[in-house]
Length: 548
Ligand SMILES: Nc1ncnc2c1ncn2[C@@H]1O[C@H](COP(=O)(O)OP(=O)(O)OP(=O)(O)O)[C@@H](O)[C@H]1O
Image 1 (cartoon, rainbow, N blue to C red):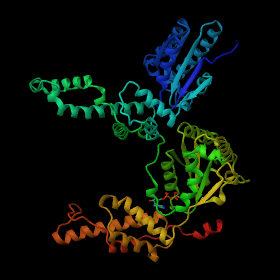
Image 2: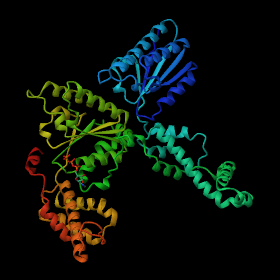
Image 3: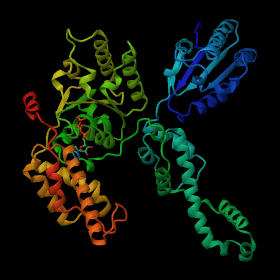
Image 4: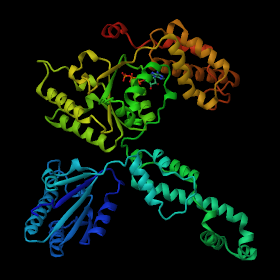
């Protein structure tokens, strides 16, 4: 039919998302020859040997055509040639390009070979190699529906209790990729095994001749019991929803271990006051992420994101994290200046990559702290390079639009120097002011900070609470931000410890800082010491009021 398919397909996505499994599944279904190879196994220490291995590999694929050649972790051998990869690595890259070109020529002669390559770092590939892969498939992080299907398929042959609900389990596993879910299923099986083994141990007498068990060595006994377990009716050993949930709490997703984006642990219980801000965020971001259908039904087009602005230390970052947690979205946090690079073009590339990463982690909240540094007003004083970064960011924001699952939260202390274009409807159309807390708000914030740090260990008493109220209402706390209240609590805790050491030294005549025996509790005197030390950090609140 004259259709020319691509000879090269590049699969990318985080490790464990199923690239290798997919390659094997494709090979199984097309019925062509299949040559799977791990890129690192091609490399040899001897000069010229690696290049020869690659040549042989492509020759073999052409000889046995039609063939699917699968190269796993291709970034290990086809990295960028400009970044310190000289000599041998450069020759390897040329050899791969050569091989791909030969495959193309042979297609015209009726010998069909497709190269399927996998990587979790597509941006690290040499550009000319990447260009030879006409099709790229971003496997990304599985969303809720995909996780449900993966869990269902992994549990296909297992005997499950009636209360197992895959939809619910998928909700509990955001940020988990295929391999994480496989661990979850394995852990659930071993959980159920443990439960059943305990059962069997108690019932052992009735299942077997007791002497058989008492005469056996511990290892033999375990084996006998496992055999019993296997033969027991499945009705007795079905995996329950609770066992799945325990398994989920045991398995940490790889993305979290590798420092990729994950859902933050911060919840609204960590945020004091700011209820108005919370309400606005619920309508503008949390709702559209949690229930997109409802919002489209009533004709609300979700914006790309919002802008939080206000004095430093008033909880912008905290709130952004709580939003991500409540919407069960992944969270990528980046400080504006971190994206600015002195090399021309690098910053734009970094911005584009950031959005690509967010897309593969959808639903995802991209948090830009110090946004003013990234998108300053485009006037005559702005360099061409900076203007290009602003343009790139605007283009990416426009692409985010409908249902991409990416939401941007920008934060700044200087909304007056941000380029206006970023605040147009459809982009960061809503600006929310996160200001200094009132006296009542301070009480709420101090209580929240206390409950989540000190109170967690020792609980709260009515006396503590009354003390916190008194401290937060104190005139000397006027103008304190949330961060200042955090510092105040640290200073009070410090004063409390010093007092306890001093007390002990006087009582025992001992010196040194170790071996405190009493359990120190912050008292009103400690708060007094702290109030003398800590001063408000926001000096020019009038500036913010003027902008408002
Ligand atoms: N409303 C609040 N409730 C509880 N803690 C708060 C609150 N506001 C601030 N804090 C405390 O202050 C710390 C700093 O706040 P955060 O980083 O969110 O401020 P920010 O507005 O993002 O500041 P910056 O503009 O400097 O980035 C928090 O980690 C928290 O301990």
